Image (tube, rainbow, N blue to C red; front, side, top):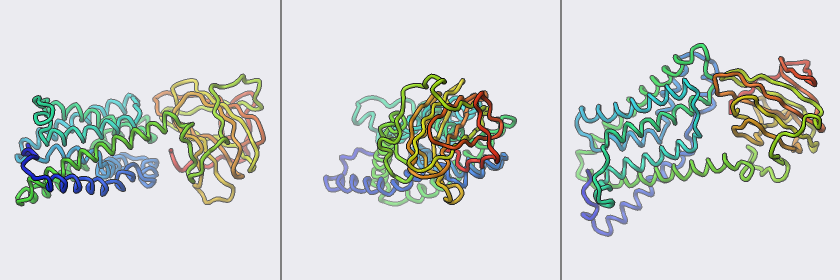
Amino acid sequence: MIRPLSLFGISQRLALTTAALLLLVLFIDTVQAHGMSEEEKQSILAGGNWSYLKLGVTHMLSGYDHLAFVFGIIFFLTTFRDIARYVTAFTVGHSITLIYATFNAIQLNYFLIDAVIGLSVCYIAFANLDGFRKYLKINPPNMLGMIFGLGLIHGFGLSTRLQQLPLSEDQLLLNIIAFNVGVEVGQITALTIMLVLISAWRKTRAFQMLSVISNYGLILLGAYLFLMQMHGYEHTANAEEFAVVNAGVPLSNNLVVQSQASDSSAWTHTVELQVPARGDLEHKVYVEQGETFSFAWESDGSPLYFDFHGEPTNAPTGTFQSFKTGTDAVAEATWTATFSGTHGWYWKNKTGKPAVVTLRTKGSYQLQAPEGAQGPNAPSSEQPLKKRESIF
């Protein structure tokens, strides 16, 4: 463990704090960029276990929160046996929850999971600083057991990311295993680089002081991650208060969210759409700028991820603005179009069972619908709709 900070003078303490803050600032751009890129999403949509393996590698190598935790674990380990024990405990932990949660479609709010992962980074750095004895005057919990438990939480984080993608029902287990193998390959790669750097760093005279800086930096980074994820959770839990379009324009009063679906007799058109298990579906109408229409939809099964969005006329392929996203089983709103173009709903079913969405609409719009639409007032379409490029 690290020697007490009291060995350093007041000026050194100020230097440590300043350096730790600078370390945090260096991480900010990386933190905000974390996630699955569009290239990764398109690659995984193409299918194939090799794509899942590659995604696992890149996701771990870009997973600053997981890497920071691993970095904290190995910081003061000097023997291969100790490194193998602790890293194995973390690997077994996150592998269990990654495979089990994904295979059984267990979904937790990823903002909350990532917030806990941020706290786990604080925890490991606090333990490295011998904070339990120095500040809490207690013996630290069994480190091996804690790392295994925190690994279980990290596995839920990996699973929530994986379940945002369309998984093959026929090869589900193989997809999950391929992704997990990729995660381990990425972890081993990162671990090797960390060990080389720390081993070289350990031989310098400044290692003791810099190790304190690094662990205080990890605490600040973990706290920053926690606050950012809780901020994201607030935007999800209270979407109506924080909703903005992709272009950064506030929704203002254009979108009026109602409490529940209204009586079907009040609607002009009703359509039933089946969202396949672990699949997705999109439905659109055309609306002129300034026109207003209302909609209400409800799912007969589990809550679905949804994205109510618009695609401006003559805009480049793939261009769209998301007006409201979330996960729910029912939604209703009135919308005034800010541009002429198609406006529609994208649903993602992350469960292992098909879901039927009943969509009701009224107002000023022209009907468009995908093939297979059913219902007493189902609209028709002369040409099939283009598959949505983004799954979010």
